[in-house]
Image (cartoon, rainbow, N blue to C red; front, side, top):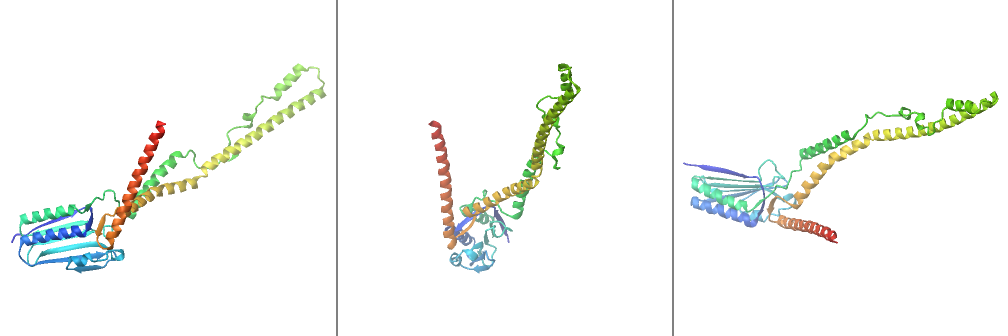
Length: 324
């Protein structure tokens, strides 16, 4: 006996409400009734976020579930077929944020006729397309993703710090200043030149007078030297403080590297959490979860409208100010 089978995987989100769930069941029942007049069966397996699993034989029991909190549905499997025959339809919807080991939507059809199988697959595919939810803006928030962004931030900040360093990190002292006190003398004053001028201008001075004038020249020279040394010490201390200050900022650089490294990971985490809260991707939309989902949709719409209005007003205000 001929037996044909086909599996279909859908890598997308979904918003499955009572209306579209019943449509899926109706088209499945209709196709099974066309395949054979035998007795039909159906089974519904539900898994909750707390790990509990329940099996029902009626869709009404599934739709009457609270579907919130620890009893929120994260997995729904629908098995339908003909008793003692090879006609079978299986549909699975999984919130892969709770169970990442499988695909979000999976359905398979088994039958004894190729035409029936392809028609059934086509009709189910049409119904599935109505509940699909684009998830290209939704990102995962697993530990290895955060670590990847953290390492990226560390690499960029470390590169920036290394490029910006202009010294080798060794402490310097004021006595290592490369200038001398002579560099700070504002008046060109040399003892030998002054003595030569004295002998030329006053050749008749007595030895005592020459000694006295010599002492005055030396005193003025010492005063100029002391003033220059004070300026040298001041500049040397400022140079040492400035150099050591930039070099002693290794701790600040380390803090900068850590903060800049963590920043991309923090931004990524906040984005991932915000998007998942404002744009739920895997939704079993009945019971209490229906009200929660509708509130989230209204909140996202309000935020989107607010952002658009704020941007429009800011652009309009800028254009208005330019015209004034």
